[in-house]
Image 1 (cartoon, helix red, strand yellow):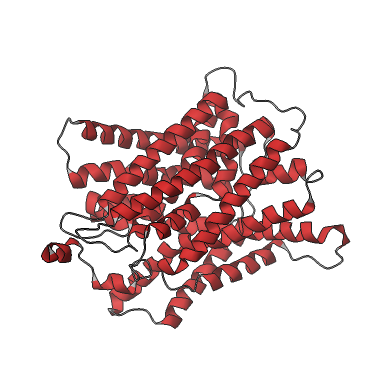
Image 2: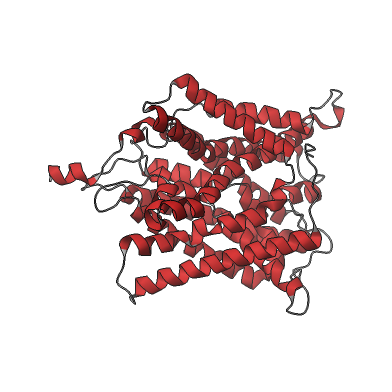
Length: 449
């Protein structure tokens, strides 16, 4: 039994030097904290926008189906984390190269996973810095006589806080930060939808889908965009293997058991946040909901009839959640930077070099946020490219790695879901391109609003 336990997990020496796998004392609680922090966030606030194109029935149905679908692919990734030989795949890219080969694995997974990490951090700077500005305006009110910082200066302030928090050495060390992020995300999701439902609805609320009467491109492509919004809500799959990599594992107690326990608990809470905010938000605002989602709707329609302290609290919760989410989404980027360094010099990073890498990434993310303030307008396009990470690739990786018997139920299921996920990705990208061409986007460099 001892021999079996010792060969259950084969550890690479380099893993002990990298921030994701440096500490392997994680547990089901840490798994739940990290999953909640990465699984709830700003993307939940735009869910009602999907309902404006899908309507009540199809909106609820699509949200429910995608939720079940991504839970299944989560289970596949958790089971694929450890091979029968004992090798652990604690990064999505490594599992992808195992399944698809070195060339295709990197080609298919490198850009989407790095976008879901680095691109999310850039977006969090925009949201966190912008909400800091709103929070200050709410607290200060009309009596402020001081010169308010510009949007760029708020981005600087947010980035400084985020970079300071990023000095925690490894993924396990930010479990408390992830817990704070999870609590704040749950709190502001419930605050926003409850206030929106309790307050009177705006005049002219309609629930007719914002599509053409006939089944043509004007009706079809908004539906694709709506499905992209729903699918992109579940964007934490690129972190699942990394979170599981922080756990100890042996033959008697494999890591998949506490990991799955934590994920099930986390997604039960996530469901209690996403479904109410999608359904309640659409009921409260209908087709009048602004493009910014529920937070913008709250400021737009209820700024006058909602206590200032409640608006300020909601904004503060969003800022704290953005700071917390930045840490877990930046961790794969930090890990990749240190992987490149340690591969060349064959020794771990010093503390000052690690701090330098993280400060440099914070500066780069800030620069992109300021230089490309229209980046969120491309979220549908880039999100469609990243969608297979959640819905398709896990199914193909299961077939290629586990090699189930052909023409069996599990074989058919994974092929159907994998192919369907790729088709949906293509349709979402097509819809995003059509939306950009027909409606256009306002491109302005170095002018954040």
